[in-house]
Length: 465
Image (cartoon, rainbow, N blue to C red; front, top):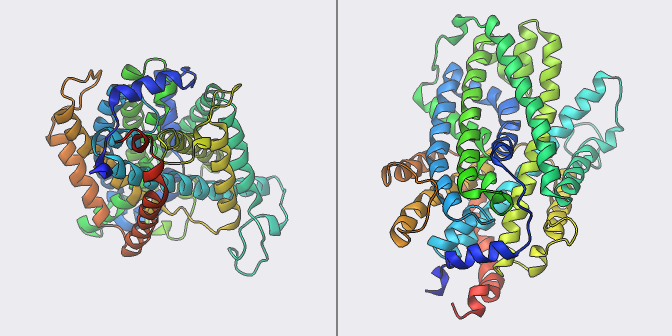
């Protein structure tokens, strides 16, 4: 039964108070952090692929994906208000479902956040090189992509992808206040670009392009929902900031739910306008669907702004995902499940310096030398599993800690958490079989590490738990 030993919530809260992270974030910072993580590659790239799968009914696919996230977000909000401690779902599972479940979901999130930063860095590199080409600047071919990723060309390293990862790592390592200020500025720019697209594009919509509305039936709608779910990933990273928030019990739920609602509204509007301007079949093979819609509408100068918005959007995704991953590693290390060096706090910057640079070194190298696409499905399956678990954990928390102070309570328990589980499992069932195989291999590796290292080094093990 030691596999399912849980960590005392009072001990978690006491530990968080003494570990030295600066409490500098407010509700606006958290909403913008959530938007910073959500609005990026998913909306600027995956909308074209989603339209090919669902047709104009892509806007319904976004609503379905948003509902799955929304039900889970309500569960996250209750946990964040009751247990404002770094580590996100890893911490919440450790308090409710037990150590081995916490380890496995933490291991899962390390893969999700890490590959997301690497994949988005590669996407950022492509847009950045396109922007430079517009000014007549071209990097040496050997430095533009991972080995073997460009047919007919000799490439050695994706240098822009590596450099943006290292630059963001340096920013995160130097302080959460500095990271938040940078994120807030970048979010303001990219939301402005999205609103500009909506304001200009709505006048070019041809309702005939919405017929037939769902050419591939509901199966296409559901398959697209499983894919574009990637576009909503990131709001959960807000909970990783718990120990650096001035009033976490109030502000974390605002950040989680506020960012998700804003992004859901923007996504549905963008999907409606894009498929209204461009017949959905024309998105085949297009990796810049948003700017394509503006080009077909004759708004070429605004299309250039959209490309800039995509670069800014991807930058903030890398920032928030890197930040979230380092805080999960920090929490796992503090509990003894990872080496203690990873939870050391820098005396000047009050950040987990070593953990941050470890993440930056590993995943900047992957971005530089591994030919990566967005890896959307593999990232999605890990996130869907996490969202299902957080929903189950709320039910357990209500039973085991009924009197725990909660500034926010998930409404409709047990119906809302069960709906979250149902939506997540339904979307997981629509993912590719190869995705399931890769996910199981990663989990099997994590299970081996748990029994060989983590279980014996856990703080609860030393305490006789």
